[in-house]
Length: 90
Image 1 (cartoon, rainbow, N blue to C red):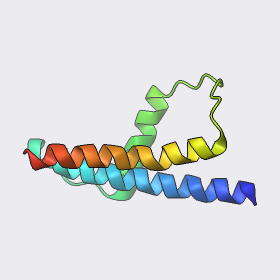
Image 2 (image 1 turned 180 degrees about the horizontal axis):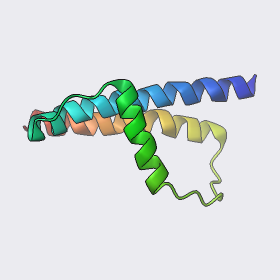
Image 3 (image 1 turned 30 degrees about the vertical axis):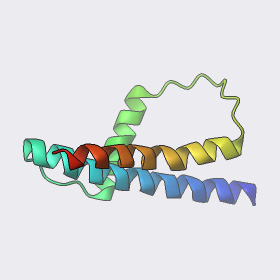
Image 4 (image 1 turned 180 degrees about the vertical axis):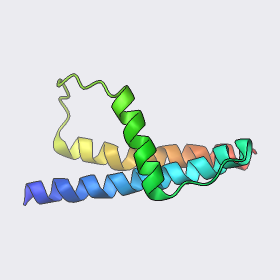
């Protein structure tokens, strides 16, 4: 049951990250550079490439599974909220 919950959380956070990236892309990249909007699958692909290039796993994460779960859900929402505030000033 715990494994199923982790899989569902992974799917949820992946889609959430893709959604947040599409919104931030539309607010800042499309308006600034005139590029096309992203779809969620395109955003997920870009996020995958960026994560692959920048991830540095040390294996020493002492947080509990609950703390990690809260972080992976709240972090994208935090970036979306900050982006929204920035977007208001454009």
